[in-house]
Image 1 (cartoon, rainbow, N blue to C red):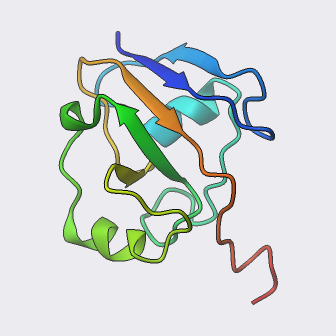
Image 2: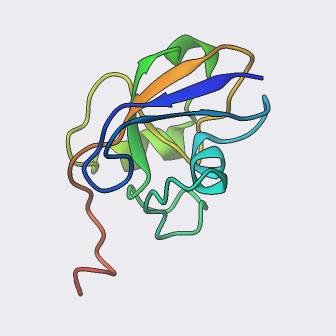
Image 3: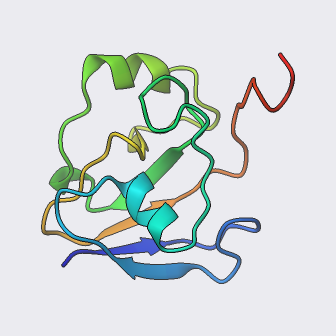
Length: 112
């Protein structure tokens, strides 16, 4: 089973964390199932950017981003070339390391 290493984040994983998840699982699902309560305002339907992560290693093992995801990522805070929406990034057999950005844009929570 692949391992997801989450780099330290003050709110979601202050000490960092390593979790295992079966191949075929989205990074978002794996995080949520293992107590890392990453935001996912659209309930993982690829309609927002709140579950944005930066894949620091293992990026190439994930499924390819589709056009809809890439269009949404253009609006994500802290976008980098290895950015993915964790609800759309599906694990293969390789371990991955992810960083959850410090900020997220959540219009519902911010009353926009």
